Length: 190
Ligand SMILES: Cc1cc2nc3c(=O)[nH]c(=O)nc-3n(C[C@H](O)[C@H](O)[C@H](O)COP(=O)(O)O)c2cc1C
Image 1 (cartoon, rainbow, N blue to C red):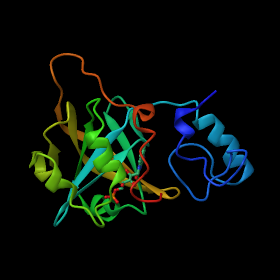
Image 2 (tube, rainbow, N blue to C red; image 1 turned 90 degrees about the vertical axis):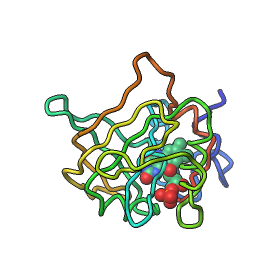
Image 3 (cartoon, rainbow, N blue to C red; image 1 turned 90 degrees about the horizontal axis):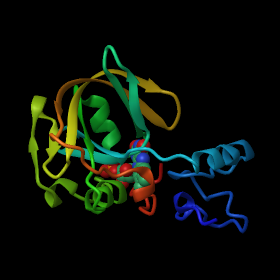
């Protein structure tokens, strides 16, 4: 069965189980990691654009993220150490976490391009929102979270957020999930 999650990850190996380097989606090279990749291939989850205000705003598409406490409300996002956004997010007091509309444009811009060579914010409508966090005008829902902690557990840094300002629309909105955007090749190797 064709697997949309693996479509951009099966490079250079006839059995399609290994890849040349880390990427979002299954297959990382070592056998146990490939087995875990098979598990990961079954998953789907929301994707977000996480932004931070530095001297210049920065932001990237993030799938490694989720709520981790109800009371108090806590949410964690995992940002690759390789990303342009990483240093900006690490230095920031707050981050903005945006859900994405179903059309691909924001996901392609923030997931397929890197701030190392592209001014992503010149290509979208955005404004400085609560606590100066960059807010993407097209995002159907977002929150600004104060960074409470940073966890160095691998090639991504976890940033623990306490939501301080939340914006949601009155009705339900369709939002993008990992499978909707798995065809995008990450702008930065992870
Ligand atoms: C489907 C998909 C999921 C991604 N998930 C993450 C993620 O969870 N964390 C992360 O740091 N980067 C993730 N990325 C990669 C970054 O969004 C991408 O490399 C981006 O171009 C980095 O931009 P920057 O260098 O401007 O920060 C993902 C990319 C794609 C296409």
